[in-house]
Length: 456
Image 1 (cartoon, one colour):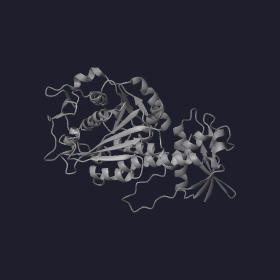
Image 2 (spheres, one colour):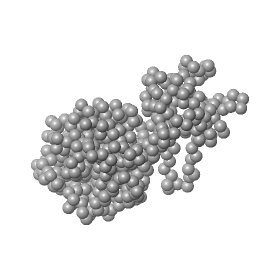
Image 3 (cartoon, one colour):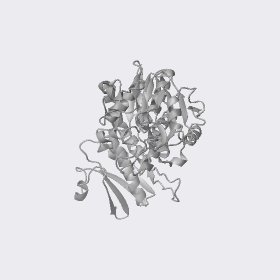
Image 4 (tube, helix red, strand yellow):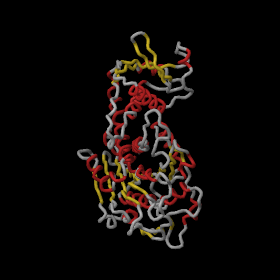
C-alpha cells in the first residue's frame, strides 16, 4: 500500500476532528484512491526530540498497517515548524525513523520487520539520512549489548564482541585478561570478579583522530549483578543483565565517533565483571588497595560498580586524560530522585552541567544536574580503611556514590559522572522506543566529546 504522509496543525487542517489531535497522534483517511496518514504537529514548544518521536511513531504506524511505500514532503513539515530549519527537521525525523526499526529477536523465531520505503522529492537529503542511519546503528549496538542474556554476554564474550565490532576501524582494542589485571593496576576489578567462574577482563578502546583534549570514557561493565555476598532480594533480578548499560553507552559512543570520523582523542575504559556469590567471592569487610595507595573497605558487595569505576578513573589519569566521564547504572536512588526520563549528572565543575543538560535535550538523552556534597564524606568513613564503599546514611545514595568516585579524581582533572540506572530502559514505549534497552547515553556522550573537543 502506498501512503502519503501529511502534517497538520490546528490552523491548517480543514477537517474538524483532526484539529483536536495532540502532537504525534496520527489518523488514517482515504480519499478516492489515495491513502493519507495525517500526523499532528501542533504543540506550544516543539523540541528536536519531539521530531524524533514523530519519525518513530510514523514508521511504527506504517509497519503495523503493512505499508511498503510512503511519500513525505519535508518542506511542508518545515513550513509548520518555523523554529527549525529544513535540515534540522529532516535529521531529527529520520533519526527517529531509523531508531524505531530496532528489534532484538536473536533468540526468537520471528521475522525481521520490513521498513517502509520513504520517497522524497529532494536528493539533497542523502547526507542527512546517512548520518541518521549512523547514529541509529550506534544506539542499536548499545541496545543489543544490554538486551543480551547474561549467559550470552560474559566478560570474555563481551571482549570478543568488541574486537569484532572494531576490527578494521580506527579504534584500537586492547583486552586485559584476568591474569594481568592486578599487574596493570585494576585491583578492584580483579577482586569484584573473582567470585564468578567467568573471569573478569578490562577492555581499552582508543580513538586518536586528534592530538588535543584527551578524553576518557569509563563505563561500568557488570554483565550480571546478583549483589554478590550481599545478594539482591528483588523479584525481577533478571533485569541485572543490564547492569553493564554504562559500558554499552560508551561502546556505542566510540562507534559513533569513529563512524563520523570525529576529530577527537578519546579512550574508553571498560571493566567487565560478573558479580555473584561464590567460594572465592569478595566479602563485606574486605579491604581493597588501589593503584594510588588509597584503601577502601567493602561495606556492601552490592555497591560493586563504584569499586570498578574507580579503577577506570585512576587508569584514565595515568594516560593523561584531561576530561574523564564515567557512566553507570549505579544507584536505584537516582530514579527515586528524578523518575525514569532523565539520568543524574554530577561533576567537580558544576557550572558545566547546565550546558550538558542542554546537550541532553538536543540529543534525547536527558540529564539533570545533581550536587556532589563534600560534607557527606563523613558518611563514607571507615574504621579500617581510608573510606567505605557504602554510605552509613540511607539518604542521598546517588550523591554519596558520586562522592565516593570523586575521591579518586585529581583536582586538575575535569570529571563528570552520569548515573543512568533509571534510564537504561525507556521511560515509555512510544515513538522510537521499543521494548528492552533504551540505548541511553550514546548520543549524549558523543555530543559532549565533540563539543568539548572544540574548545582550545
